[in-house]
Image 1 (cartoon, rainbow, N blue to C red):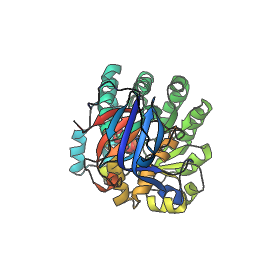
Image 2: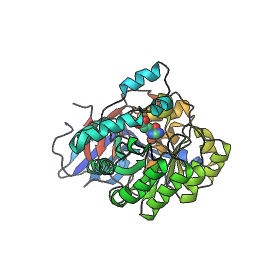
Image 3: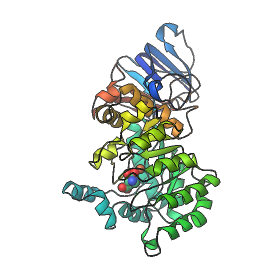
Image 4: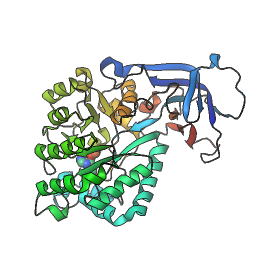
Length: 416
Ligand code: NIG
Ligand code: FE
């Protein structure tokens, strides 16, 4: 069936070689729990009205009647729809020119300092207008969906003025994404003379009152050349008081106090962590903050990988995500990120799957209905093009996503 055809309310996927899902009902998973994947061989999944209503072994499937679409799952395996909990997918233009300069030796931080980098995407995003930005996000969203992402977060942070920041949040929300306000991504040209503190005042006084009703969470880029701990604390404390969940970009290039701040403020996550050392690892492991690891970004910038194995072994809750953006990770594929987790982060395929399903859903406060294949959960799933689900991580850059189901509807399929 074509992905756009009218589909009735019930969907049965039958004769699946495997159904693989993170075990249990709690979130986030950590330690040995991160490896526990329940696998049903030769199974079915029944969906109605956007939810999974039954799931189990084919032996248990009795005659179903009525209006029903049946999908033949032979040779395929099902995993939960993938959850991308950290993207910057709402941007206009691209940075392919900068990519070429970096290939010739320029560094990401040098390009940023010269007014390129994030600021060049800010110029393109301000010029795009709401319709242009919505079209760009729709294009990026279609890539993400084809790669198996059924739930995505996307940050603002390419507007850096009142109106464009709000436009970004609205566009993400209208596209069905989870919007995060990242006004504190960079200091915009208008504020360079007056400084980052004045920009932080502007964000809190002029933008936050409107952003708070559009966004689910707030984020800050805590880094040398961006915002320091005190500025991040001011922004995030005000956001928390306005009812937003908190996220934090931290320890990407330098270990700069992001983990203690995330713990102090009760953030949902601290993201990147390429530069995190033993003290930060231990602190995160004893906290409820999730470490979101972004290996595609480390690869794309040729930076050290985050200390994933040490974090998992210490007991930290971790998630993995793409960081999809035009500068540091032009990559929308969570299956590729799973491959990087297995090959570069020394994570088992089981840990990688839990990290981009249930734990990513927890970061977005959606773990009660997303990130697992179980009755009552949203009918979001990926049918992997092999009878062993681990091909999701094993097939590096391969065509592993056969069919994507979102809310009980087939939204992408390679089957004619
Ligand atoms: O997560 N580090 C800051 N922000 C993004 C990159 C954004 C960009 O380069 O446009 C990141 O890597
Ligand atoms: Fe990011």
